[in-house]
Amino acid sequence: MKKVYHLGKCTTCQRILEELNWDEKTQEIRSEKITEKQLNEMAILAGSYEALFSRKAIKYKTMKLKGKMLSEADYKQLILEEDTFLKRPVFLIDGAIFIGNTKKTIEAVQTALHE
Image 1 (cartoon, rainbow, N blue to C red):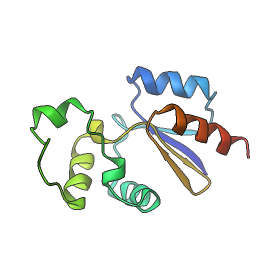
Image 2: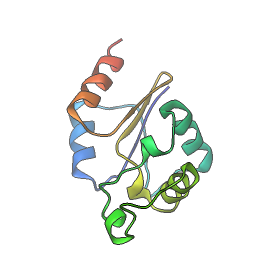
Image 3: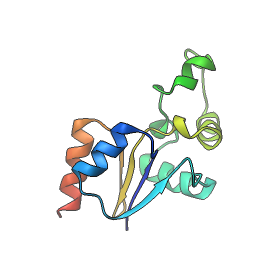
């Protein structure tokens, strides 16, 4: 299975999907919210909810979360409540997960797509 979770209005996500010529399944997480089941599956592959959590989200600052000790349950709940807390894009490719938009991550996605 090949799938990506992304925000449609995120120009970084748009650029990455275009660069990859992504024609596989997509889920725009603003219009089609992530379900708890989907998030649980991602967390199992990622090793934690924290690995999926974006500290770059504007709400991270406005909610004054910096410096707070957050539990796995907190990370999970925050991602489910606010889509911008998901580190994006998240690619699922044949049982592997690729999280975020770093150059290294996108190169790994390209490699996985061509295997």
